Image (cartoon, rainbow, N blue to C red; front, top):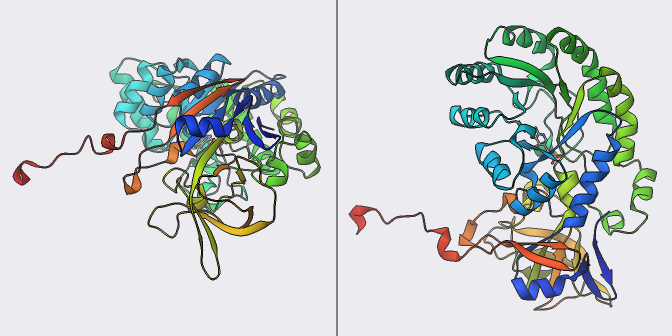
Length: 432
Ligand SMILES: *Cc1c(COP(=O)(O)O)cnc(C)c1O
């Protein structure tokens, strides 16, 4: 469910016409709905209410300060993967004591910073990392709260680049080795074993893999929780959203249709997992990113040219793979709709950007309404892993971001001035 819908011919974000935003702020433009963001956070937070829990929004999915502030005000915690993300959370007014610090490559400096900020837990991914955290904590005369990420070795059935819960990838520690690691970690004086963590992958649209992973680790969790007085179990993020048009179009029947097609909803997620989690008596941590931010954002782009070749109809737009890399990187599908609804026959089109790469496309051979120069298109469900993955490739400035709340809209990030792209560069002395 989201707050992007047509009224008459106009695409609206909540109460604001998207075309007016495109004219006022220029394109490419990310537009976020505060209501959608809030709604998705609360839906998940509410279904978990039978247990003590903490929803830690995955900052890497969308780290805009305004969005983080919205979530911080709702009481969200944050799942961070770098010192930079922790600084962002602080800048947005988030509570570091509700932050969990994940990632396989935490540096000494990052560990020290996070320790000084009193994060809730370090989610460690190797024994070497536990030793390093212990060493830094000893130096600071502190005790570091830690959890170890268990790799349950279950197939998540998602795209290869976003699966994390099998032994084929770099994440976590093998299920069979976990108890040995906890035993050794328990002897490290500056660690406090606070929890256990898992995260099996991203964009999972079924509950079954979560259920399988939870079922598999339950006996282990019980033993560890008792032995080390653990406080929490994090079951990670990875809850998928619907990108396909019939469902993503925001029709009121969305949740019903999703349920009928056996697609994960907050209700089905909770219904299948809570009965297994509740008896543990542990605090349950969730780390959703995409589920909260994904449907809350769109990328608006302007049609520059329409180029018909013998076989193809290319719609060349002013956004590119540097603004939204998901189609090129993950073969991802984003629904593309005109900002002013069109009548008339659709034409099989490739929507492509101006970057000099054949991978720079948003869709191929997709039936789309006929459009022409100056029309605006919106790529839906672009709120997660959209702007955050953008780059300056081809010396293209980073897009602007706008947050909408009801009838209000304001810039949440100014468009990057081109000059800023090379402002840190120097012509070296011997070339002057
Ligand atoms: C990326 C990540 C998440 C969030 O994943 P989503 O698919 O966006 O929910 C949660 N936990 C960890 C450890 C991650 O790396």
